[in-house]
Length: 99
Image 1 (cartoon, rainbow, N blue to C red):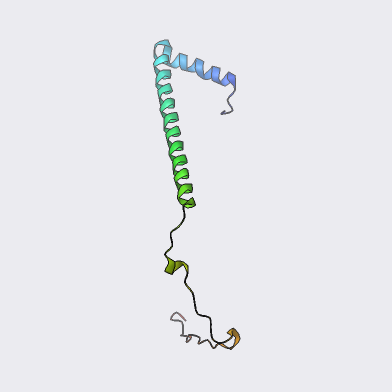
Image 2: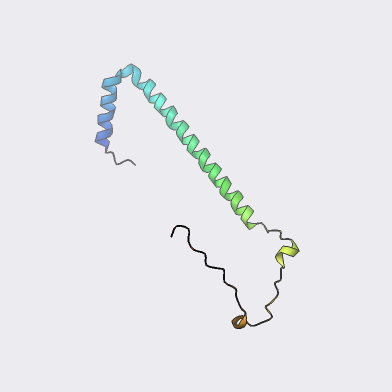
């Protein structure tokens, strides 16, 4: 999990027993257990919300898009002349203000 060997866990347990004493150790372990439980509950809630959002997004993406007929079937007139003979007016080249 965190790459901690069993001997390191044993060392931490003995150190906690010596520093906190046998009376305070159960209280501290209970408090840590509650924090871990709350963190897991928040994590599960967040994952549920993300999966619900993903489901809603896929449902919205799969629903048909309603186009009005005018917008969907727009037609554009074809040019009356072939493309190689159409004259194009280029814009005037203005001097650059910073030059």
